[in-house]
Image 1 (cartoon, rainbow, N blue to C red):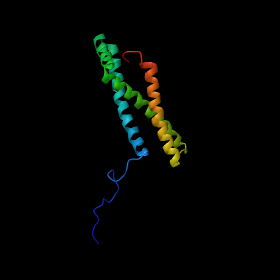
Image 2 (cartoon, rainbow, N blue to C red):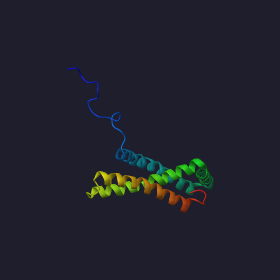
Image 3 (cartoon, helix red, strand yellow):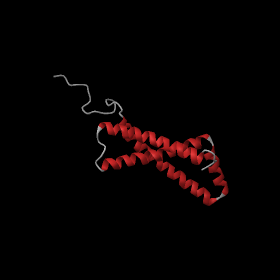
Amino acid sequence: MMPSKRPLSPHLQIYKPQLTSVLSVMHRFTGAFLCLGILGIILWLYGISSQPACFSWLISVSQNFIGKVFIFLMLYAFFYHLANGVRHLVWDAGYGFEIKTVYRTGWLVVGSSLGLALLYWVLFQGGRDGF
């Protein structure tokens, strides 16, 4: 018998990305991204407490395009991680394991986190400059 050239175990080259796997990876990425955000908050607090020049530099960084994109992505990461965490808590209680429910709640997490980030941005960041 001729040995097969296929891999012995499945891996990423074989699996087609599914909503569940993409959401799982996104949950991990948003958690790591939120750690960067905590460092940003620490830097911001340091800027407030140290001297006005440092704080004014942080405000100017937050007012340019890159700063605003970073702040919005931080908002989305926070709301995504929160919504997906609630989804996991429901799973821990033993509910929502049917495939149809898993996909429905997955899309609900994506939509609600984007909606909450946009709502927060419009209500609290839209007309203001800086943090």
